[in-house]
Image (cartoon, rainbow, N blue to C red):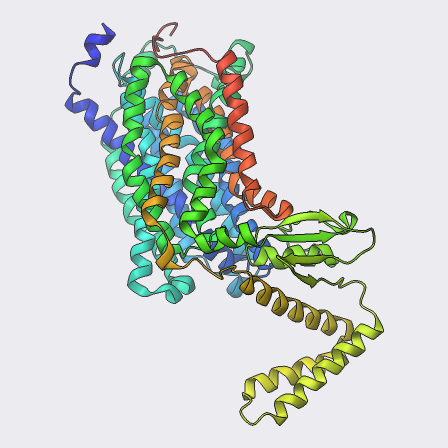
Length: 596
């Protein structure tokens, strides 16, 4: 019978259900992804009090805040969805999501209202996360409960395309705005436009969802008086269901999440951050790969109806874990060949006393990195230069080796009177030299005089600034001589090869994500389905996936190697493969109404 149903065409009502659910979810993902795509600009607007490296990481943590609260949204809205219905619950979620996004577009920045700006921003991100926590489970359950036996993978795979389409839509709106008003204006105020546009998308989404009918499975169950009185206790208070929730998390969604976020988010951050490709070009390359790769959600969703969900998801996790390192190294060679060549011929090494080195992660901006090791690493991190660590003699000052050139670092906490005297004498000489130079610029002279005057107010602080400026100049010259580029050369970017690599990463995403909605729906009974499937999905995607960019960048900042952030998704995806293969059962032939 399942085979016969699978060959029948989709009815008009079924098409409407899929279209309405998918379109509304596209708009929600558009809202959610705007922040992630604009994380660097938002960091400059709302976390400007922090140093550049911490600003980027903290802006990503604010992005992750929305993911962290998603499981709580799954509990709140999952419970409502199982008690009062699917339709009305995810109508509420889209209202919360859309309004929160619109408010970000009008929120004053740090320069205007100080600390209140990032606090309110994080609060809005958390509201978005709560809403999204209730959205996905509702949309996936709603479509699956309308789908005939033998077609659930194909039908729900349309929901799976919404995240990628939402990301694509956000990239296009951002790119269009950037092109129309220019990069400087966009960074200043134009970044708000994509957030403000979301109010139009919200109106369309609400209108569409108001026209939808309740899920027939839930409607029938409600008429029979079989709805759950306590979905939370039934889902998580009974071991027979709780163990399935745990397996769904560690054996499915955790691996799926890190593969998804590596392929669609971390790849973008890697292009713009580590490889220094300009934002507009990187967005276009990601968008092109999404256009090519998105149909594979439907391909793998439909294929899962024939061969099963589990083999496809497990294969995606395994292949991704095995190929991430070679793919990202190939991405470096295609996007910034000058950088790849410099790394191969002139490695950068930090030689330092390990006892002097701190964990290079400062999300609050309160930590002061004053040792020679920390200062050396910070200077390299600020330039997005990948480096290796080498243990030096105890008590020795750190040295940066760029090929055969060595740049001595300094300790800001160990500045001596001799250091002060030498730095002040150098500052005085610079002033005299500029005064004697006929074509000296007035602004240069003024800056030099201010630096000299600073020694009378804070001698050690001025000495540290002088040493920092000298070290920056030496490091910049050494890197330039060694062939390290300030940015990717547009003429040398192999766009075809990059799109090919990015498309492969997106296909991995479609393998793990295309069948997962159907599989999660099939793992739980109707009366507690919304609640039970939403929690493992949002812990997996909210915590394991949402924290991936910030975690990976922190690993890179600590180790110095720009590829080491990949160990996070590789380890999680490998663990999911092992657990999933051993303990998760296939579900494609499950009758989702049995036992209700």
